Each structure stands twice: as C-alpha cells, then as structure tokens.
Image (cartoon, rainbow, N blue to C red):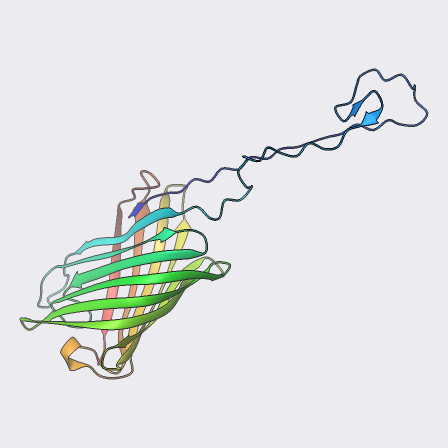
Length: 249
C-alpha cells in the first residue's frame, strides 16, 4: 500500500501585556510594550498578508493504492492464481473533492474470469468524518470468453465510524434499472509504530438477477481478510495476508 502523506503546519502568535499594580512605586522600572509615557497604545493588528489560521480552501491531490495482491490458489480446486488491485484518490479541498476509484481482479467471487471497475465521483463533506459521493461507474467483465460492459450511477457515503472502522458504502443503478450495493469495512490495529495488523470485510448484494454480469439477486458474496503490513515509510508499506471469499447465487 502506498500512501501519499500530507503535512499541515500552523503558526500561533502569543501577545502579553503588563498593567501597573496599585500600591507599588509610580516610577516604572521598565517601559511596557503596550504603554509609552503612560499612554495606552491600541493593539497592533497582524499584517494583511498573513495566511488564515486554518487554510481549508487549498486544493490537494491524494492517491492510495490500498490493495495490490497476488493470491495463489490453495487447495485442490480448479482455476488460476488470482491477482487484484484497489486504488482510490481525490483532488480538491476539505469540502469539495473529485474522487477516482478503480478495482479489479481475476477469477472473481462473481465467477467471472475478469472484473474491472472504474468510478469517477463528486464528493461533498456533509459531516465530520463523512463524505457524500455521487457520480458514474463503468464495469467490464469477461465471462466464458465474452466481454460485457455496462454503465451505472453511483451514490454512496465514505468515512470513519466509531472505534476507527473505515467504511465505504455505495448504491448502484445500471442503465436498465438493475439495483445493487456494496459495503466494505476495514480496521487498523497498531502493533508497533510501523507494524500494523488490518482486518477487512466486503460484501456485494443485488435486487435483480443479471446473468450477463454473473450477478444474482440477494447476497452475492462475502469476503473476510486479514493482513500484516510493515511501513518502511509512510508512503510505502508491503504486506502479507489471507482472505476468505464465498459467493452465492
């Protein structure tokens, strides 16, 4: 997993003023910064070119390669070794962002030979830790030597729930009105400052059966996974893990 970290800096200025205390000598030992010959001076405002204390209008670019797997098949089942990726990122500020997401894999839980998914979304900050996302998705599958592609509308919420679970939920509607949904949850457990144990859960469900895209009605799959990563740097962390996939329908 590769993380492009973002650093923020802040500048604080502290001002103090001295006031005379009754009962003490009227001859000051030193001249206060706020008084000159006993005349109080008005406070000096900061220069006009000082930046605001919180810069929430600056645009930034963030990219996260969260999953980059090669998964050899274990057991006596038929099929090929699997590979998988899951990439997402955004460009924008604290309130408005343009999100891009891509994921795909071979020998998927949907029984397709390949499955590639690309999304382009507008994200809007709606509450602390939560982004509302809307946009489009293009999905391509290869099944029994035949490639099929469809477009879908997307609306979802991504954020952080209590106990530091990162979640991503989305509702999809394709051009024919078929409705499906996806939910994923991940949680990081810090064993050390660099060694991190992560658990992962993902499920997909659909209202209608779409045979052309190997999608059944109801619950389509469940995935449970765990991985151990070591952050050589904040931006680069190789990992090993294990996952259990179960398909339905």
